[in-house]
Length: 405
Ligand code: ATP
Ligand code: MG
Image (cartoon, rainbow, N blue to C red):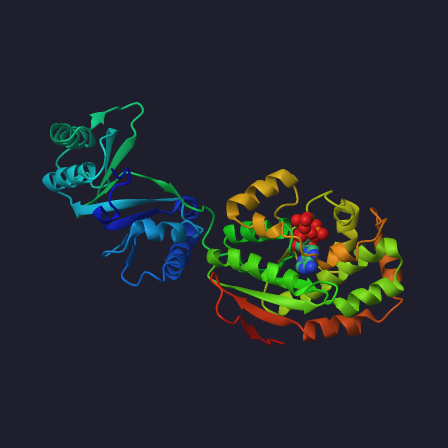
């Protein structure tokens, strides 16, 4: 027999906002944005209707399967938890009957009833509701009460007009709705760290665009595809992601020709920051995000970060800066980007890695080396020849490429 209750017993999904509730004055904007984001995430369920109130959102299913909706809802930031619900009039006979129907569609379990009244006008107190509901279930089914450790907690929320009956609570993605916090430009490589930096940025309500530096023919089409695939895995969190692919080869070769090898990575990363800043400004992004983690490699010592960061005054957000690699990997597995990140295709950094990169570069030395060649013209060319790809959660027959610049 089916352990899950029949999906079609439910006619609503009740959404709880969590962290939003504490954000006093911005609350209205947050709820509005969350409403829009939920609507976009559930676009493929045309029959549903979404109703929002100051502390809850309700999805009227109108016959749609809540179990099909669940994986999409789980990717909407700003939701603390949600439950499938059965909505009835706030009338004790209707409530009793609905709970009985829920119980009868499942195998017998141990249970506890937890009623809450938001409307204190309701003629029974919570405890009386609990007892009335429990007794009808006990009388008509094999279900047994267990108050301490029930297999199912039957929650009943009594409002003025309507009552919601729920059995399971699913955790939401947490955070803030994407878009309430403006927009940032993420430096997206094919590694493990930057997709997680992207995820954590969106989780704080900041929408993202991505920049990727490609060095064909030293980097392959597969490396480019891998980055687009990572963006595709991240796209459901905000609907779609614009990925800017920068042709980086000429600039990178010039760096290796004119600068000493131990400083090549430092200079290369200073160029990456300069390009990211220009793209960010064009696209109205207020910050740059990357997957740097303190001490992970030579270019990520504090001395390196200091020297590399000096080329821009834009805020640089490093969401994984203080995380251990194992913590980042754990999160990457949960988010679902890990398996793609460990695919073998080489990135531009890996190919040009010098044998002995400097771990304590100085700004003075970096500036002196940069005076040896006309990097400004090469930078301009990189920005001008950038190709922008719209990436959606599912791959269209042909990726939509636009020439923004
Ligand atoms: P890994 O997960 O293996 O550490 P990584 O992507 O973090 O790979 P790093 O060399 O540590 O690679 O680079 C640090 C950060 O710099 C990346 O997280 C990313 O934000 C940015 N970066 C590196 N290479 C590129 C690239 N080719 N395009 C865009 N951003 C890049
Ligand atoms: Mg890294």
